[in-house]
Amino acid sequence: MYTAHSFFDLAEFSHAEVFPETEYMWGALALLKEFVDAIPVKLPAGSKVRNGMPLIEPLILFEDELLPAKECEIQYGDTGKGGLMVLYKGNVMNGASVIMAGVTFLGSRIRIGRGVLVESGALIKEPAIIDDYTEIRHGAYLRGYCLVGKRCVVGHTTEVKHSIFLNDAKAGHFAYLGDSILGGSVNLGAGTKMANLRFLPGNVKVRTPDGMIDTGLRKLGAVLGDHVQTGCNSVTNPGTLIGPAAILMPNTTASSGYHPPKSVIR
Image (cartoon, rainbow, N blue to C red):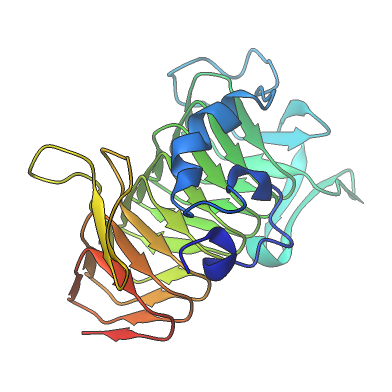
């Protein structure tokens, strides 16, 4: 009931091996650092990128090279649908990603996939993996050990720390995710916050129909199954598990523990 396969369809997720086959799905968070550290990722070197300094001009990432954007034409279509297009002398640079001026990288252990848009004002701290056709919006803050799938959105002034986005997960506006997992096609309403640390000492424990389960984790935010939606200004307590296709209503705080699939949490 609490395994990854009971919450997520992992068939098209490029990093499915981060999830234990038979253990609780939150075990992926215990493995996340080791998993990401084992992947050899590195931002292409270039004089235009200085550690901790905002970019002074936009760059194009194409075939593992960072190129100046000043000679390119950029068409800003729907990133998640492959609509971001870069042309050089009239020729399409298939799979090119765009990194706007004002983006800041802290460290170089950062991988940016094909067709990605990173908007001005975003700050990405190593290590981070950002898969194809994802959009990192203005003012987003990725604090390290972020594993972001394909066609995702990390939105305006959204902060993400030690978390996993499965494909098509979107945290579009003013969100906080700490030590959390968003399933495929999850959509967070504006202002959704996922608390990850109890006031009291000790590990996060999860209340389930089978009794209390000690997660073994000092920090655990929320795990949202595929197609979960949250309303604006909703909050999840540490250790909240929300089953697939459930809805967390606006201005609602979800209690710690297990909420079944297709629940409406009021």
